[in-house]
Image (cartoon, rainbow over all chains, first blue to last red; front, side, top):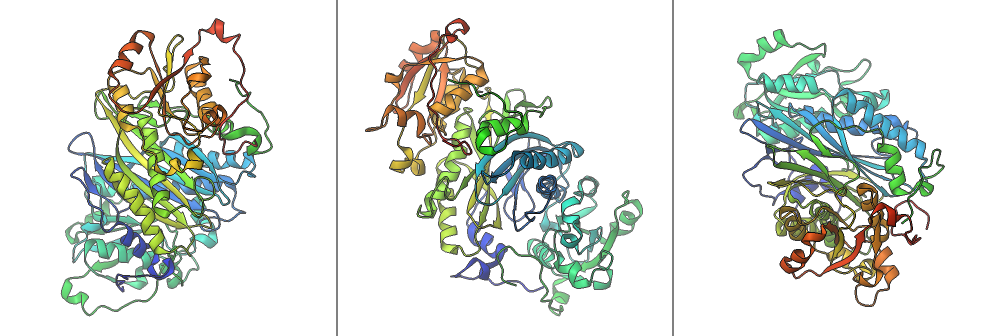
Length: 307
Length: 307
């Protein structure tokens, strides 16, 4: 994977990319002692009410024309907005608690459609025992739905992106590719049980969710953990009929990507209690072998980068 | 004040209004035991780490063309977004802790402008000791900036909108009217110290902030507390050169509106430790006198209502 060089005086967001811009914006942030992890992970991690209690704090937006189209049923728009944020709680091994809904929408919207959108949120919230505790409305020309989530881990540390070590196995849940085409991006089930199991049992050393595609998301794991990975491309689980390139770059998979210490890999496969497919797709490289790595130019979805 | 009747089959958001739509969307929500207050107050109130600790959870958006114009300096856009959310923490008597920034913006935006927007947020965050712990970017045709805040009260209960009782004095901080025209809406200081003082000393029985104008916000306090108020119009503090109607309807004041039990009013005025102006503008009515109230047809800002 190619590491992007920081750009000092960029002219446009497109030249920077989403990660580049976020880095530019937040690189000067410093955190106090109660912040275990800030920008750069799937959620912020904050100290909770006692030593082994942590709060997870997350916000995520879906935008009309980007994350869904004007033809997407409203119920699925609401569902997707909450599911994406839940996937970020899953990516820390956490349990979701409370959600707030912030909705900017055209004043010409039909109230019935807005109700349907809320129904989609409510149904998924019930399924995962999330309490909806607030809503806010404003007008805009384009629908933007932002979900804020508060979650927790009790009795164990949330899993960060920074914990991967050389020699560890790289794993992914489910199958990748074709999520947008197939409509799966509107109906996926966030991997909350899997994430909690991985964190609670100390199975994984690092964990994140795949939202922009393995080709975009694996470099983020790499950067956070400061190691490179070798990928076994033939082991990357593809959704039926999808090419390797689709599995790498389509994005919107909302599967979990994580690393496991070599001495625990056999037991992990033995004890994995879910019907969800589990694939070992690579290995964390030692610095020496990383030098001779094959570079890949494939990339996943970026909000601002020109492809 | 006129109480709006619920509309069963509305055709447009404009006919419902912001409050009407939010009621329609959230009226079926039920909360668990750990939720002290959900929709309908300035923040959600959640039980904290011990009996006298409460978490405050809030999300709020500003939208280009609604809360600011394309000519508004980016730094002030960022500042306003955080200041509005902080005002909601002030309106519970709470202390802000952590913030997340969710920014949807056109890909053609200049990175320098986005940096300025973040600078505006950062500067105000430092001023009020708020830790910025996460950011998220997506593309859109119109700039929508959503701030999510986590706050707390330690050792005392957050002040709700529902605590006002007949006979109590109705108070407001500062002066009202002309906030948009004068640019104050971009530079106001959220009344965090005042709110904390009112809650911690058990001075107020109910508290909220004025965001849409007294004419819109007082009915919300009325509805939550299930009492009516008499207003002494000549006592409503107007910003220099503003009419009564402007003080009632302009909105964007971000002052505090609260009620005080009659036996504490003299001491409140005596001990009020802030340079901020304090005005007694009305009285909570007993149900019998409320029947003969003068009805007012003036109204403040509503996101969807046609004026």
